[in-house]
Amino acid sequence: MGIGLVVRLKVHPGKGPEFEAAFARQAAGVRANEKGNKLYQLVRSREDKDVYVVMELYDGEADLAVHRDAPHMVENRGVIGPLVAERLGFEIFDAC
Image 1 (cartoon, rainbow, N blue to C red):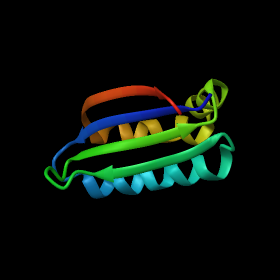
Image 2: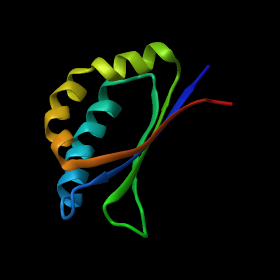
Image 3: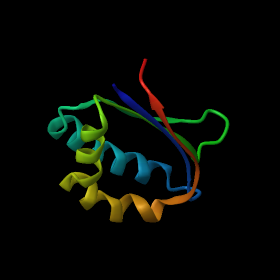
Image 4: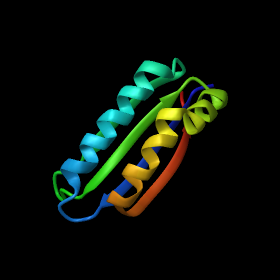
């Protein structure tokens, strides 16, 4: 069964462009190296320019585990982490 994740976060004021660039590099790594990933998309709030949602979809649990430990993810955590002010929400879904 497929697995979906929705992560809602807020970046530090003025760090949106830097966060988006770092996420784009990370997303390129996901798309190039994770066959079990079906969606890895960043969207920004129209109401608060510092609020983002990451939408992810994987074929299964094993693919999500691969994602968490993938070199491109590990390398980019140190770049993205300091840009995030607050994690506003995190939810895992079963794909229908």
